[in-house]
Length: 285
Image 1 (cartoon, rainbow, N blue to C red):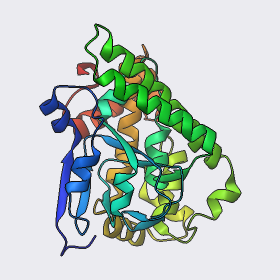
Image 2 (image 1 turned 30 degrees about the vertical axis):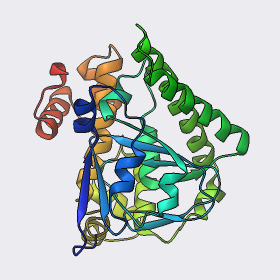
Image 3 (image 1 turned 180 degrees about the horizontal axis):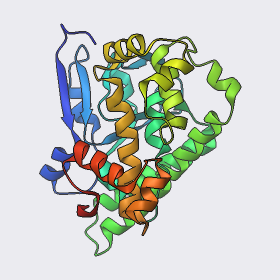
C-alpha cells in the first residue's frame, strides 16, 4: 500500500446503525466525497456498484480495472480501493450491506461471492442481464422510501435475488478457465485469491498456497502483506469464518458436522479456532 496517502475508512455497520436501516442505498455521495487521491478501506460489509460508466478506472489493492459499459463492481471489506474515476460514482447505483445482512438471507447464499470478489472485483454483464439488475435496484430504492408493514422483508427478498443473479454471473466466469487465464495471470495476489476461492475449506496452510504458486511461504506471505496490508493467514482464516458463520446461522448442522465440513480435525479444534478469531463460541451466535 502507499503509506504516504491517507486511508479513509468506511464502516458499513456503523453507517447502518446511524441511519437506522438494514441496507444503505445512496452510498454514492459518501464515496464521491472522499478525495480521489485518497485510499478507501471498506469495513464490516460490502459495497455493490451497478456501473454504467463507459470508461474510467478503479483500483482494488494493487489491481487496476479499466471500466466499460455495464460493469458490476463488488468491493469487499478490508481491501484498499483507490484511483476511482469521478464519473464512476456519478454513473453508478450503489448498495452497501453488512456481512451479517448477507449471512442472514432467507436461505443460505454460497459464500463464494466473497472469495470471488476478492479475486475479481469488477465483472462485465450483458445488456439484458444488466437491465435486470438495475430493475432490482430501482425496486429496492422505491421500497426504501415506503413505510409499509413489510418493507424490510420485501427489500431483503429483492436484495437476495440481486445477490443470486450476481453470484450466477461470477460462476459463469469462474467455470471458464480460458477467461480466467486472461485476467492478469501474472499478478500474484490475483493468483492467490483465485486459489483461495476454491481451496480454503481443505487447505489452511500458507505452504499449500506457496507450493501451488511455486514460491516459498516467506516470499508469498511478504508479497500478500505488501499488496493488501494484511497477513496472508488473515485472508485464509476470514474465508473459513464466513462459511462457519453462515452454517451456524442458516442450518441446523451440529458443531461436529460443521467441523467436518470445514475439514477440522475435531469439533473442539473448530470451537477453539472460532473463539480465537471471533472472541465468541460457535453456540453464542
